[in-house]
Amino acid sequence: MKTILLAAVVSLMTSILCTPMVVAYFRRRGFGQEIRTDGPQTHLIKRGTPTMGGVAIIGSTVLGYAVAHVVIAIRGGGGPNASGLLLLFLMVGLGLVGFVDDLIKLRRQRSLGLRARAKFGGQLIVGVTFAVLAMQFKNKFGLTPASTHLSYVRDISQIGVGVIGFVVLAYVIIAATSNAVNLADGLDGLAAGASAMVFGAFTLISFLQFRNTCGNNPIFGCYQVRDPLDVALVAAAAMAACFGFLWWNASPAQIFMGDTGSMSLGGLMAGLAILTRTELLLVVLGGLFAAVTLSSIIQTGWFKFTRIRSGRGKRVFRMAPLHHHFELGGWEEVTIIVRFWIVAGIAVAFGMGLFYADFIGNG
Image 1: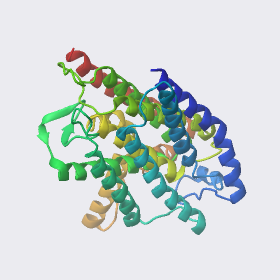
Image 2 (image 1 turned 30 degrees about the vertical axis):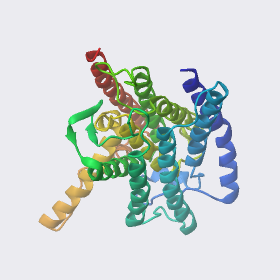
Image 3 (image 1 turned 90 degrees about the horizontal axis):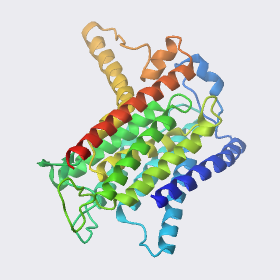
């Protein structure tokens, strides 16, 4: 538990103290956010706010994890494990895809960066590489970081998808979650605050799995998870990095995380769900992100359907994603953020309740 706290503290302090340096550097380089002209007009005043702040979140997470392992090594423990390194690979890899997207926006002075095909292509390369590697590195008990079974709060033994099926499933989860967090990153601090809650839940889940791992003495209800402590270190470091970044990203934001941050955080959430065997539970824990994504799907689908039927596209919401619908309805930005945080907290609490109910039910 102390090493988990250490990873969180180091990550938190690094994020809080280093983000202003990132802000100053990006301002000198002119790395300012471009704003959609068809969105809420109140957002136009945010034009020029430094973006790509996700580099601070990623760097803080990696440092928190590394320092924790240095302390573990000093105490005579082992080095980093496959699960933790895979999670960091996924986070950094998708962060690089988002970084390229942000850089294109800055250089071309527009709110659109990579084309959809290029972005999905980058996610495909990183996601498939993660999935393939996650099926390697068996430990002495024969466990790999990931499993070929579909999972809810643990593996569903009756539903196996095979290695190829797992790779496809992992890519879908990674792409869907990274894009969902990206869609939610439209208001100051919204994505960072909601992400911190989800990572907090994964910290607790992986810690409970660590305390009840099957190991060499399987008992009823134990968890067949490889390296749960390493997973907890990454989750705790990411949670703390989000909180530290939120200090500067809260309204009025001094820096935005950009696609660099949102895609890396979404990818990390997906990776945590896959490696903790809680893939379906992620839909509940990330309920806010699911709702925001669903609003965009409904808006686009209904517009195209009505345009085909009547020649004139109709909208369900004033604007998608969902938070912009409420903005155009007259809600203050801070009001939307706080209420969406409440929804995110309720979703996380409900998801943790489902996990804990299974935990208690299995003794």
